[in-house]
Image (cartoon, rainbow, N blue to C red):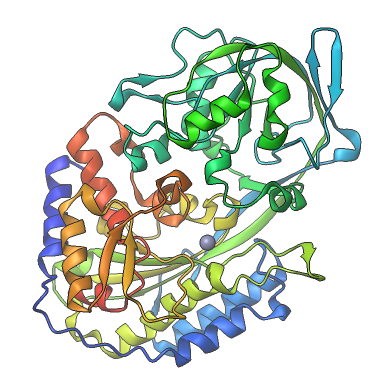
Length: 486
Ligand SMILES: [Zn+2]
């Protein structure tokens, strides 16, 4: 899309929002809660991608869309079928060892480090020296190249997740995706990487990560989506064990972690240690669907544009028991958001009077596998790509207390942020910027794939404008906003 047109569309979208506009709210929470209860019931077994439980949840969603009178907008009725490949590491046939001088330390998959099944896809046996690459980032927009001058040929790069504080968080998040990281490392001949979670920003303690580390991973099956060509092994290392990686290097992990905690620049240097990795990988094919419905707008020309309301309906299925319960019900993540989309669809259909644009309701599959349903949809959208002028994505909507504060990612990055603030203000809610930039939330739900790939090239204004299409509205869990946008 040409730059000018994109900016124009943005202005049109936001021009309909006014703080003085009277906003009618219909939400009483009862229908929403009944849907959450259905989707999060034990009988749906945690809605794992490809499972019977998720198929039941999706059939229920289709039923709700039909009952509400929405039109189907998938490739086969309400459904868009997506093909996946599942990968699992057979740890009984795999091993990880760390070499230092003449010594070898055997690593425990549970306590020290494990193969990421998402990043280790073909059985492989490698022995390679290690290089510490800091955060491992190459960000041309900010003239940052942590890989400059390093010899990575045939080696495994070790990095600490995070970014220096002078990099805007959305940009840093983008360059921390596997695709972007691997592009830079692969260019320099690396054959794998070890990621050390930043102890200052871990979402889950190692014990929780490790408990489910050997769950199978998935990726889109079509070769067009392979983002890691040439990657032999991807390894996740426990920060509590990471000190041994740095033996003899003149640096300690404790010092590096202290710098990373404050988002300071990190040094880059060859390590004295090497890794011997033997990974045995099993894989198989899986199919699962996105569910898509639409509500046409009333304006003769604007109805050709879509505001997308999206949420993922999958969760992580069955896993290691917590207090004896092995079903991960996913009520908050993201039965709550799916129920909200269904509720808004019914409500907007019943009260369509202010909708000028059309609305597309999308329930994604495989978000928990790496936003894969959204990635597929945006590569093969069921409406013209350029007709989608905004995406409002809801993930982990939890209305258990009166809404007073709304977290908006990228609030300060565009004038959409100002409009968001004024709509929120009209409802007595304060919009605040992302208070936890290290968690990379911007790239961690389905809104991310609505940003066209080419917008991350060097056109500063275009980048900002495109970012604004989604991030300013992420987690805007209002029904008022889509109404105002329509
Ligand atoms: Zn989620």
